[in-house]
Length: 373
Figure 1 (tube, rainbow, N blue to C red):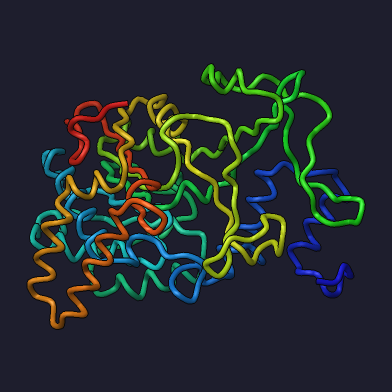
Figure 2 (tube, helix red, strand yellow; figure 1 turned 180 degrees about the horizontal axis):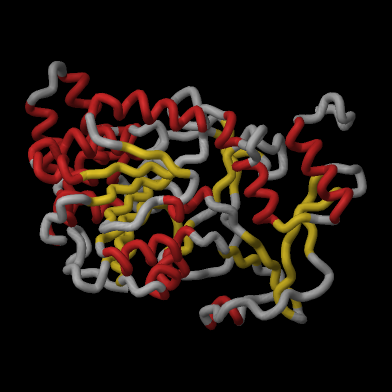
């Protein structure tokens, strides 16, 4: 790419202007702009999901995933003494595949279906349109929101699959005199580069000892987004539960996980702003701290494979295979099952974790009966 402004991506040109005017920007600010800029942000302009996009999520791999989550929400509703109205909320619904499969699965519980008021938190106009078209046939009242804070009060069941990994992540580098904020700056050749603020940061929130005692040069990541707090507030105030499935680590730890993906391949985080997906691993320990601070209880995380197996995915796969139209269709079910629960390079069963959060009055959510943070 040429360095001339005329050949530069519009969002990169805007980022360069901001850095020139105000100095290097924190990594979290850079990530927020790349993903959410109203005009050029990745989630505002790109078709991210599917074979033609940059990545494939679990609901796109098999209907089994959304079906099991739908039955999970129904079980929560029953444990809540079956309220007449329940806000079913999905954060980052993608193309609507998960919720479409979930609502189809719970047709066996017409009273639950009749109680649902669907709320979808989505910032992408293109994805919102796809969700509306797909979910229209479900005949469930649905409302779209820009953030969880906009969802009205009331008993709630919240689902977030691969949502928190896309929230902006801040970074700091450990030096001899403390933690220094990592930033995006302009290098000597005017390219976007990482740098480190010269002055140490003010003391951060209490960190685990193994993070505080990190060696010089270590990178620590954290999120300051309020969505986790808002999720805990909804649950603790109005009753209900939340299910979070994402890739990440069970405990807070040092190490850089910020990455970029474009066309199903890894890319340079600082290349082509707005045209590639930026994500970072979810710190489930920090997520639980935020939710528990609002009065909800945390369960897990456990590996996705363990969670899906506890919900009966093997049984569901066997039933689907029994009615498969062709041997190839039956083989596809086996392949999907292996992808969702398998371990190793192509499996999602280990890397992805599941955590649940619930009002103290509820028993442990399905799949988490033996887990508590």
